[in-house]
Length: 140
Picture 1 (cartoon, rainbow, N blue to C red):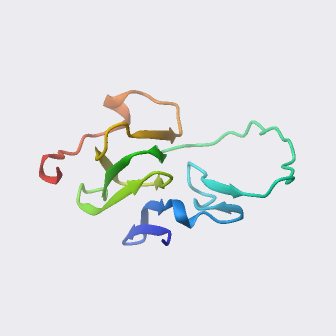
Picture 2: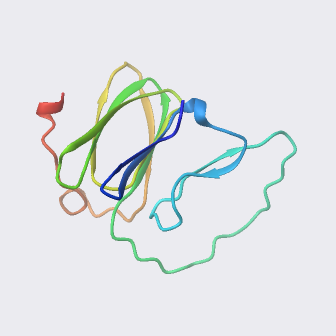
C-alpha cells in the first residue's frame, strides 16, 4: 500500500503510512519545517547509529502536531480541515502510522483491546487552551 498525503488547497493535513509501506534505510515523512519530525528506521543487524546529544535550540511552536502508531487493533480516523469540514476517513490497522499536521481529527475504536501510541509536541496547556471540539455525532 502507498503512503497517502492528505492535502487540500496547498495545506498538508495528515500523512498516512500503512504498515506495509515501511522500507529500508532512514526515511523521514515530515518536512523539516513541521513541528513534529517523523521518520522510520529500517536497518539490518550490525548497523551502528552514532551516539549523539541534541543541542538546546530555541524554537517557536505555534501549533500542536501529533503522531499515532497503532500497536494493536483497528481504528477509524476522521480528518478535518481548519473549517471543520471532513476531508477523509481512514481505517488504521496494526503497524500503521498517522501524522497529523493541521486541521482536526477524531477517532472511533473498531476492535476491543486496541492500543495506540500518541506522540505530540508540547508543552500542553490543557484542553481549554490547546483544542476546540468538533461535534462528531454526524460522523459516527
